[in-house]
Image (cartoon, rainbow, N blue to C red; front, side):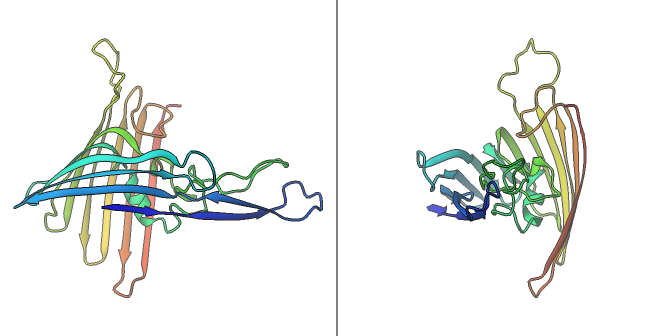
Length: 238
């Protein structure tokens, strides 16, 4: 099936405070176009996803690839995915951020303000809003991720993020790894996600070797109200 989401953001600003009135800027706001499909047989199913940004305010008509992966799921064994995708560390941040992929914040968690004047406001590219690290943005090439089936409310996940430039003669571990778990009961979910980043980290938006930890929790009430939180501890060599 083919799916898409076309978004435009309209910004009103006075670039230089010169009294010439308000300027209007119309920008792409994380538009995307994708194709997905799959097959299933008994307890086994396979799926593919290909999604890329969609340019709708000028340019070539297509922006960078977002998702490009295949997955294999067995109802009793879990899901194995490979390709370019969001890390398991990123997903809880996306789920709890009501402003994710909106014009409130740019791709790096910055809004449209700019200084000093005159300058051009930041283009709205979507992404996480303030308070979440940059690991909540972007998609990672060379990802291999596993998510267990639901075991009485508990799910476990693991991932390897491969650096294609690594060779047998390369010193150090240039790959990166992730591990996490979440437990859901009723409307309450709590979980922990970790990233172990190698010498030349393959995970997108990583400035250097190190570790990242995310403790997250959220509650969804039966009336539709949701509340959530995320605490991150980052130890990164810049």
